Amino acid sequence: MTPAPASQARGLMRAAVLYGAEDVRMEDVPVPVPGPGEVLARVDVASIDFTDRKVYLRGQHPMIKIPGLFGHEWAGTIVAVGPGAEARWRPGQRVVAANSAPCSPEADPACRQCRRGRQSMCENIQYNNGAFATYILVPSGLVRINLHEIPTDVPPERVVFTEPYACVLHAVRRVHIHPLDTVAILGAGPMGLFWVIALRQRYGPGLVIVSLDYQDDRLAVAEVLGASHAVNSKGGNTRELLRATIGRPDADVVIESVGAVESHREALGLVGRGGTLVSFGGVAPGPTLSVDIGRLHYEEISIQPVYHHTPADVAEAVRQLVTGQVPVERLITARLPLSELRRALQMVADRTTLRTILVPDP
Ligand SMILES: [Zn+2]
Image (cartoon, rainbow, N blue to C red; front, side):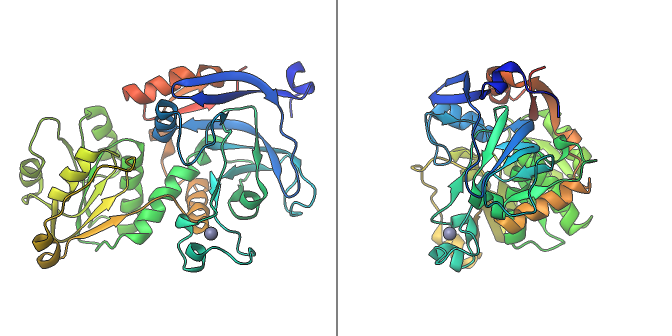
């Protein structure tokens, strides 16, 4: 490891602290000291996503305490291990972690949702933030369940998307899809593109994947990653665009990967007979979606919301990312030093980047 700069030697580190809506400040804060079962890691790379942008704009989110440390996607190197942590963890190990942990399998009793196999709905879920900093503290629950060692020859950039990719793998695992189905994905942002990758990997060449977005540059990436068709739906009637593209105005599975009310409504209108709407993009509680009950019943329309991930999904995401079968380099469109976090947040808003990697300042 390189020698710590003077500010760290005094026990301080640079960290982004979120104080409220659009109020994030880079500050010198104490380097956390790992307590029982905890691990302290140096952040080698962090990534910024649309959730970070939403949190920044709203100044609140179920995933984060405010004021508090900010950022939830990172990969790094263990620098200190707290007393009583499992013996498999030691300084110098390269690691990646999810941003949360449900009840531990040893928890007695685990919550009702974990007992019924719904860990993404855990009533005791513990979120972790602080990726936009020199070091991040990994709480003991997360160390036990959702911290993974990474081989030293795997660049941290390749695994930094563990959390978002785990969300997609979780959804792919839960949504019923037939290999000959037609799947429409609304949104070709990073998550919509992860969907293209994961679906193509799991279902092979027979699955028809239609990627829909307003941005041609993103649609071009969707095609490279395996979309059968990439359609710019800006200003168009989506049903007619689908008909022109695949010969029918609807799809068997429609994935809302935008996170907007209007695109949820649009997505429901695209679900064909026996089909499924997958609500994947998060919308703040409040707005409603009206459903024709006659269609719902006689056409067996399913609505399948999927949120977050489970430890099994996180482990599978790490496995796929480590082996290099996920072309993450297609998604990394910018690299900035941590001190330019505000600019990185603006780029997410402007949609001028797919994924921005934040690296420590020189
Ligand atoms: Zn639980």
